[in-house]
Image 1 (cartoon, helix red, strand yellow):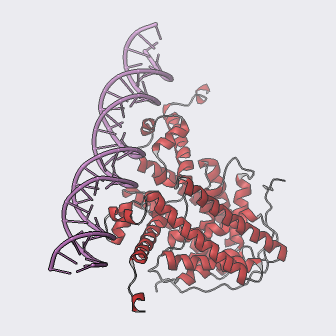
Image 2 (cartoon, each protein chain N blue to C red):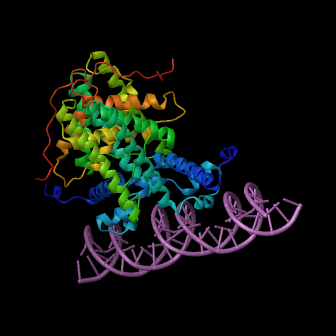
Image 3 (cartoon, rainbow over the protein chains, first blue to last red):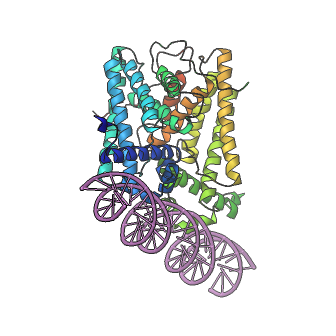
Length: 214
Length: 214
DNA sequence: CAAAAATTATAACAGTTGTTAGAATTATCG
DNA sequence: CGATAATTCTAACAACTGTTATAATTTTTG
């Protein structure tokens, strides 16, 4: 019973690994995986960079793990969107909103941009494939929305590129210490971006806390 | 008269510098400025990396020059948008479309993403300020559009973040050898992204060449 | 055609950074 | 408390890459 309170060795290790992934994600999402050094990641955790090697194989593995987790979050979010949304546009809206919120909560950053040539190795190939699969899944939802009448007639590829650009870009400007909560940001950006596809766009959009000083 | 045909020394040098900027922009926009090496840039031009140093001071100067040119193109495009557009939304639409087209024609890439910590030095500060000034200019246009009734009520910051995310993301997926021309891409993406802000969104959007194989 | 200037390539250098070995420290457990 | 294991740090190494000096080459010019 009481031994539940004291985490055992392997879960402690897992917790520390998770903390490293969070720290890495924060730095990667701002500076890019190439621009960030392992020393940057280690310093933000207050340890030496050598200490990281007990929890990740190497830098490539660290980048990979961050991307994998982000993709899993994206997949789970989209699945929930498909379950809970009535039409395809709402499925997309829910899927993207949950993605942003979950990323900010679980990873500490809104999104992770995967640069070209950032990864190498066999494992990397599978990660690229998962990313492509997610995009294809999104495109199918757009086509579905055009069939059910919720989404306007546009090239699905372009629609998804526009949506994902808006979403990924949040990583560049969002600051946790700012006036906007994760929910504010997610609903604000997703609400606006998906309005572009909406066949029946609302006149009003979710309001956000004022940030102008006066 | 005929001596106009033979470019003199300084213009030859300027032409070569321009070619280096194009090559660098292409590689930077895909891999990020940190992920790309000077050897990559040189190799894509078929010269040694040492040869680049006759045309740029160093790598920082090269990144800076690319960003400066992109910002000038963005400013010029937005000025033309302000001149030619009737309402503020149309000004934005024209400004962004011209930006994408001009970037693809003059720089060979649709956009350049400026990573955090990518630049250093005094000159860099001014570049960051110019980027901020451009964003502020865009936000003012959004506010103007809300005053003239062309743009829906949304936090201007969010609106501009959404627009610029869509635009910048084009750098990650656009391929010159693809089926879409620069104009297709620019009108497709900008038309869709600005529809999100439109108080009177059109039911139809600019069509794009089909890319599905059948 | 020869000399001078401009351009480029080769090769070496220096700083950074990913990675690893071994010492030092801390935590765990009988 | 002492011994063992786990963790972390320091320090060194090696690879990569930005930068520069020097030589080779090409272009220009008288």
